[in-house]
Structure formats: C-alpha cells, structure tokens
Image (cartoon, rainbow, N blue to C red; front, side, top):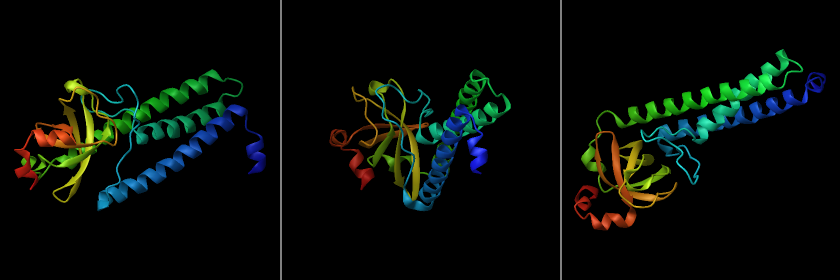
Amino acid sequence: MLEWYASLSVLEEVFFWIAVVASLALVVQLILLLVSFGGGGLGDTDLDLDGDIGTDSGLALFSVKSITAFFALGGWCGFAAAGFLPGNNWAPILIFFVTGALALLAVAFALRGISKLQCAGNVDNAKLEGMIATVYVSIPGARSGRGKVTLTAQGRYMELDAVTDEPERIAVDEQVTILSYSDDFAVVGRKQSFQEHPHTAENNG
C-alpha cells in the first residue's frame, strides 16, 4: 500500500485525497438523508452566498450534496485520468471539472425530482398555509426567483419551492410563514408577515 502511494504523482495524490474525502462526505450525507426520511427532519444544507445559488425553477445547483458529488466523481475520474495519462496535467484537470459538473447537475435534478415526489400525493395544500418553514435555499426578493423551504407537515418531511413578496432576499436558515401554496410553489414571508395575514391563523390552528 505504501509503495503504491509513493508511486503516485503529485497530481494523482491531490485527486486521490479529494475523491476520498468527498466520498466519505457522501456516505455521511446518505446516512443523514435516510434519517430525514425516517422522520428525523435532517435535510440538506445549502450554501448561503450573496448571489443566487439556484434557478428560477427551484433547481438547487449548489447544494452540499451536489457539490460533494462534484468533488467525489470528479476526483476519482481525475485520479484515473492522471494514471492513464502520465505527464499530461491539463487533460486530467479538464476531466475532473467536466465529470464533476455532470455529477453536480445529476444530483441537482435528482434532488428536485425527490422534492416533487415528496410533495405529491395526499397533501392538503390549504393546510400548509400559516405553517412555519425553514429556508434551505435562499429566496430572492420580490418574486425575482425561487428558493426552497423545508418543514414537517401532515406527518411527512417536505421540501417546497418558494417565492416571496418581501423586498429583500430571505437567507438560508431563516424561519418563514407559508402564506399560500398553489401550483408547484409556496408564497412565503418572514415570520412577522404572518401577523399581516390573519386569515392564515385559522389554517395553522
């Protein structure tokens, strides 16, 4: 084992450790995901950046899971490419970024599909109004884009696409009130907005 590791190039070592660390992180996230489906409520955590981290359609490109997948698959493919192409540094680096980007997109679309499946079925949308949710993909202000919120309602853990009429962006981990839910997204406001929409109190009770 030591002899094998000593024979690696510097680039192979870098890709190897990136892949190992990211793969271990994926295993931990998979365990947390299974716990959340079991009712533990542990969902994904997304990066709270100054800019948008998703798309207007609610596709969360830069979630922790998708970024981890980027480094895991990209790292292993880069490591393999560096071994097959000794002395060529640019090709493995390019393969790392291309395969990593594909993994990021695949996980983002998969998470979006899972979210829609979770919200499908026997969910009474009217009863979601007035409930408190937590932002896990930041929500752009003035309905300029979509974010995501999580909550446990009607005996199930849910991830909902969300927009807001608030003028300022609502950051990750803020608590919001669901003011209405229609089509495939929720309209939310900061918790104090709940007081401005007293009709939701009946639904929350």
